[in-house]
Amino acid sequence: MSNMILEANGLVKKFGNFVAVNDVSFTMREGEVFGLLGPNGAGKSTTISMLTCLYPPNEGDMRIFGHDVVKDAAKVKKLIGVVPQDIALYPTLSARDNLSFFGEMYGLKGRDLKERVETVIDYVAMRERAKDAIKTYSGGMKRRINLAAGLVHGPKLLFLDEPTVGVDPQSRNHIFESVERLNKEQGMAILYTTHYMEEAERLCDRVGIIDRGKIIAMDTPKNLVGMLGGGIIQIGLEREDEELRKAVTSLSEVRSADFVPQEETEEGMSTKAMLKVEARTHANDALVQLIQLFNKKDVQILSLETLEPNLETVFLHLTGKSLRQ
Ligand SMILES: Nc1ncnc2c1ncn2[C@@H]1O[C@H](COP(=O)(O)OP(=O)(O)OP(=O)(O)O)[C@@H](O)[C@H]1O
Ligand SMILES: [Mg+2]
Image (cartoon, rainbow, N blue to C red; front, side):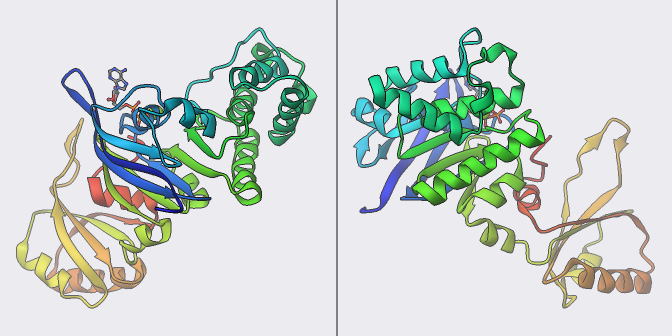
């Protein structure tokens, strides 16, 4: 287990009878950016809370840099940095004083502390505003200082919980660039949670897709997207027709075709039947064949939607719902 820096095995967390995290296992290697991608309430923050010693799991075990996270919490805490989803800064203190406070909590003192504080201020490009009280900052600026607070003691593994939610594009870019630099220049390993699939695709070496407390797929973004072949075409039809489905499945550009359950909208069912077609290589090639087939069979198409092969579509494919519902 030489270069495994994080091992999570069968983590379960219950709140009363509710199972928020249900048998989550994954590992991280040295220098890796691992993403947990999932919708609201999937269990991302709960997983991070257990890994960062906030509370223990009901079941399962975790090792970080070889230390048991529950039994050796003090050792683990020194090696990890945590940037929580909610801003955890003192609004009346300046950014610099906030960062000094966090540094002191980690045992930094004197010149060392001062230097670290100035280094992380530069890291998030906030030197000009560092003397101002946090309450005068924009949301994006607060997020950047929140990130700096997680870095002040020089952790080897950083937990970033949805660091870009509600952030303006400029700060979002800053956060992205900081994360990329930390990883590339310092080899810092990063666990990054998000429900934005573009972020996971851009930043992460590997992604675990999490839904309702379970990791339902885990691989590189490229391999996950590769699961979809050429993308997905959803076709609304008058009725479910098994003969037609078989004919569609046998088209050379089609990998699979299934009728999927319909979500009820306020106006009732939007269409009567929905055929989900996975394209083999390119959605457009499959589309040409599908239209020819439907014309020949005189089948009326009520609606048609082509979904790009990306992580959002992977999620939809696996769960039948969108990441941002
Ligand atoms: N302290 C708690 N007490 C009771 N239920 C909780 C607690 N913390 C989390 N939950 C529940 O556990 C589930 C997972 O929550 P969690 O915060 O881990 O989700 P998340 O993936 O981080 O979502 P989001 O993207 O909205 O931050 C949710 O249904 C949430 O309501
Ligand atoms: Mg969360």
